[in-house]
Amino acid sequence: MSHLTLSRSGLMDTAGKETRGFVVGTCAQWLGQKVPPGSSTHEWKVYLCAANKDEDISAYVKKVNFVLHPTLQPPERLVEAPGPFQVTEQGWGEFEIRLQIFFHDSRDTPVEVSHVLKLYEGDDSAEPTPSPRPVVSERYDEFVFTNPTAALRERLASGSKDVKMMDRHAELQNCYQVITSEVQQQSVRNAQLKFQKRTF
Image (tube, rainbow, N blue to C red; front, side, top):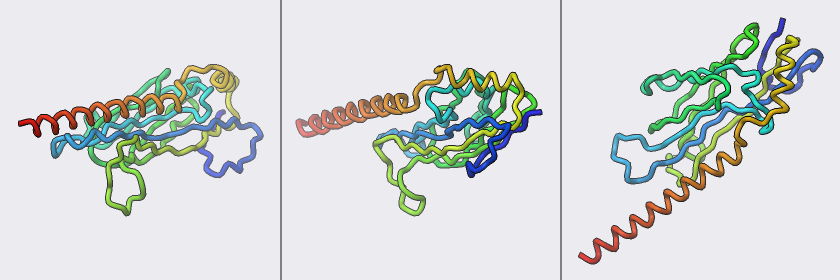
């Protein structure tokens, strides 16, 4: 029977074990100063992906249940393979997000990990200051499959060969370019408004 654990130390005996690194993270973008009071201040995304950009995590991850803050409706979002395993939302506060990860091998117990949504750069002791750049917060961990079945070993091998998930770096670069363009457009609009006020 296959048994699954999370590796935190990386010092485990590798006999009969298959290890796959993963990243859980968030990317948040400030929506700007023109947001009305009491409205969402940020658009953000929470995601689970393989640490190796050339690996297809959906080869062994069947679905992910994202458990968000209870004020967001619905507070639980189920994303099934092939993914991408991510949820995009808008909000104004930081909170802990839980991810319940299910595997194609039904004998493997689902794993739960958590990650705190970060909307602001810096540590928590400082006054939060919105950033014009996306705020990315990620952490690395590993799935350790002990004595995986032949079917699961095949899935793990196929996930390493196929490149189906979008390259995370390219995705973040694209996100940054879109946001930079929007900020530049807003700056132009602000300058036009100032000019119009001066002419009247």
